[in-house]
Image (cartoon, rainbow, N blue to C red; front, top):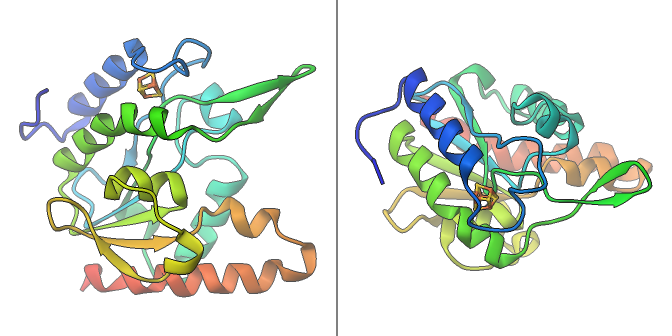
Length: 202
Ligand code: SF4
């Protein structure tokens, strides 16, 4: 795999083409397209979610659906400039189950996360961030190479295999899914977690 200094737009176009053709797990054949990371190609902070959602799969960009909007809000409240971040996902294709005509999100399994891991590692090698944020259990599994309990460990810094610090928190869809009366508190807790990553911006 090319892990050279290939972090420009052409580098990510190449990554898009290569992930589009990937069939290393069964998800790829059913999705519309692969969705690779986007943002500042030299970002000091890289945030990693789970997988593209329905809108991301159709339009080809990460974090453009409801969870993406909540992530933007939370980053703003945490004092982190969204345009200086790079955002991506542990898994590059959308996994879903059909319910009538609706495509319902289905979480990727460990085998799928592990199969897709080298693509995420490729992005990390290109961007070379100072720190990573694992947004949820799938991202933590990919970034740490092992499964952890994110609810217990949220707000803590763990280490990627190359020593990069990894901040553990929940996926931004979590505050959206909670009971309406608890969503403000869930968002505030998410912002508190993210605010710890502000230090990489000096
Ligand atoms: Fe390949 Fe990842 Fe897509 Fe699976 S989800 S086919 S490993 S790019």
